[in-house]
Amino acid sequence: MRIDSYSFGVMKVDGIEYNADLIVFPDRIRSNWWRKQGHSLAIEDLDDVLEFKPEVLIVGEGASGLMQIPALTKRALQEQNIELVAENTGRAWQLFNEQVQKGKKAVGAFHLTC
Image 1 (cartoon, rainbow, N blue to C red):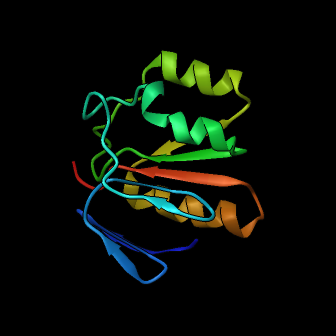
Image 2 (image 1 turned 120 degrees about the horizontal axis):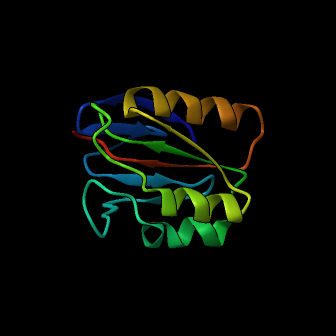
């Protein structure tokens, strides 16, 4: 999977536009991704990511970076040996593409607004 572009509220992946938060795996997309608490990323929000066991998880925290990642979530990812990279979504999608291009087993979880 390759992310083609991002603008507030819209992400284009492999030529298909998405208008809701999503998780991008190497082989599929989980669209309409919703979190237990909208602007906070709980570890339960990442069950399918944990099952996939990526090397790196790129989190797009929104256009302004409003989505927070609690220490508990960060610690749980670290315990699973998953590197966490969190940036505003405008930068995160580019980092995701870079990790994929390097051959990393990467997953991207993107909040498209805020």
